[in-house]
Every structure is written in C-alpha cells, then in structure tokens.
Length: 206
Image (cartoon, helix red, strand yellow):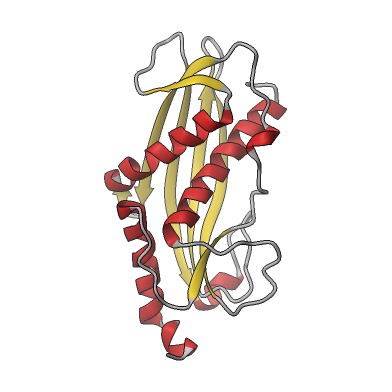
C-alpha cells in the first residue's frame, strides 16, 4: 500500500482515533506505516535527576483530563494511575494517597487537549513546542501542575506538550524515538510529571 494513501486525511483521522482508543484500552490499534513521537520539548528528564529526601512524606494526588469538549472521565481513569506511578517512581514521597488532609502535601495535575493540527498547521507549532520534520498530524496538550506543602503557598506551573504522527521513513528526527499511540501518551505524561518535580527541586520548593 502506498504511503500517500496511508497518510491521507482519512488515515490521519484514524490515527488520532487510534490515539484516543489507546488511552482508553491500553493498547495500540495502529497498523499503518507511521509512528507516534512525543514532542522533544520540554527537555527529557530522567528519574535519576531527582534527589529523594531523607524523611519522605505522603502526598495527595488529584488528576483530571479534559478534551476540547470538556471533562474526559474515561481518560482520567486510564491516565491517573500513570501519573501516580511516575510520582511513586520518583522516590520523593513515602506514598501517593487518594485521600488528603490539611497536614498532607498535595499535587494537582490537569491535562487538557488544546488542538488537533494537520497539514501545514504542523509547521507552525504553538510556543514551546516543536515542528517535527514530516509530521502529518499533531495533538497538542496543556498540563497545569500545582504543588502545595502543608502550611505553604501553592506553586503552579504550566507545560505545553504534544504527540506527533510521523511516517516511518522520515529522517532528521534526531534522538526522537518512535512509539505506539498508547506508549507515546504514557511517556508524555511521565515526562511532564518529571519536569514538574525536577523544577520544584531546583527552586527548593520540594
């Protein structure tokens, strides 16, 4: 099957439907010759860059996902465990709690779909994101992350991010790694969490 047919507008629409389906089902249904890439911005952060405190304390986590139409509870239920796992793997807290108290630190993260781009739109990305060579479609997101330690003022940050749909024969992608739809979303969420925690430590807020 020829690439021009595989990446027609109908195929592109199917690619983004696959992305949503992968979020909900936990598997990728993509079968055509293209891959998903997370945007290289913000810069990649490794778990090893975080410094666990000597006396770790629990943290209360709130996560919500929003589509362009509003609240997206199905995706919230699917992605919330990914966010919680990234925080646990950071080793910065003793546990991630589902019920909070006034004496417990709180992390609140919201993920909002901000646009679906295709064609020439992918060449002029929103500020803070990258126009990947050969990109045929992009879903852009905005993450709002907030941390509040007991008795302290909340620290709030915003991170733009995106998932790109790129033909497998595209060159010039540098160190970007191809992924299935579900894996790309998981890694994007993980990277936002790591960037947020790293930024909090750099600013001595955590």
